[in-house]
Length: 193
Ligand code: GRF
Image (spheres, helix red, strand yellow):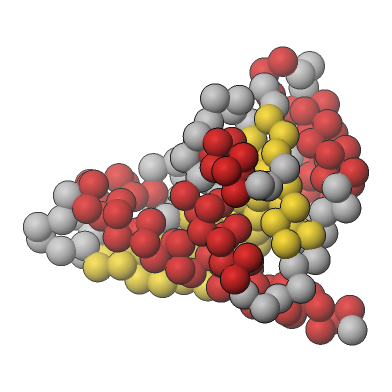
């Protein structure tokens, strides 16, 4: 199985996934990083980790379809089977959804359906919630909807700050996401065996 990771920012989840796949005995590899911000730190991580990457400026395309078609050409060119969104701050459109049905997954920093959208951590914190968490789900046309594959709860303690909560959530993400991806790959491999 050849995996592509899409990311827009720091890429700590990307790095956790690559490292997990390097050490675990699974017949799969992170074969491509797709980035929609040419100045994102995740591109440096890919270079250090030896993962091929492509970076795009979506605004320089005539339409979302044209941008996604270009991305898709790269995915097909690299024989990508499965796409993982790890901090990809963009809504996936039909071009990619149709090409990878049930083969696109996302991580979101809340217990969905609570706190969808770009600010899942801040929204839970400012709402005064006593718990939040992390969700890994299959991507569909909605924003942070789609069938849930796994969730893990994170407590919000009275002395937590947004920063401390972010740290706790990221630590859970870095453990949970690689595991869920690998379980999903094993399921796909069984289906095709
Ligand atoms: C993560 O919290 C993820 O859940 C959200 O964006 C963040 C990405 O962080 N979708 P990083 O770039 O992996 O460090």
